[in-house]
Length: 162
Figure 1 (cartoon, helix red, strand yellow):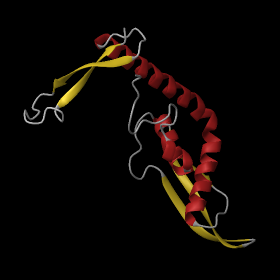
Figure 2 (cartoon, helix red, strand yellow):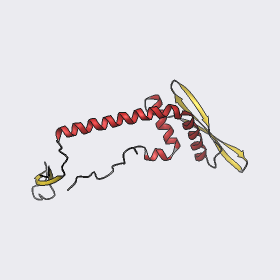
Figure 3 (spheres, one colour):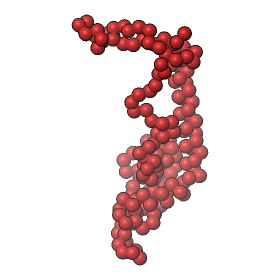
């Protein structure tokens, strides 16, 4: 039988599933790439104000973020809510920074892919693979497992199919 990952495995390339849905999360991730460190509290700030628009009252937000050694601000389009206004401001910043962000994101992906390959190489060094499927060949007791109930305290040991 084949061996498969179970549990909270994420699809490759989808490491920022939640942040990708919200431009504010994407902006935070992008700023971290630009400044090469985690963002600290207050470094990304949103100032939101109420404004009268053509269709009534709305909100406009300005986001300020660190870019290199200085702070830079962008103002988004009018939104129906403060949250929408902040997302509009984040989108304005992301659009402006896209030429800076794109190569940094590619570099991050390349580093992550190399790290994953290196980790696989380390694992395969401990458990040689010849490409065959794994099969259960014996059960052995786990350390500290209760002697009364061997079935619950057993670990499956896998060998490759002949």
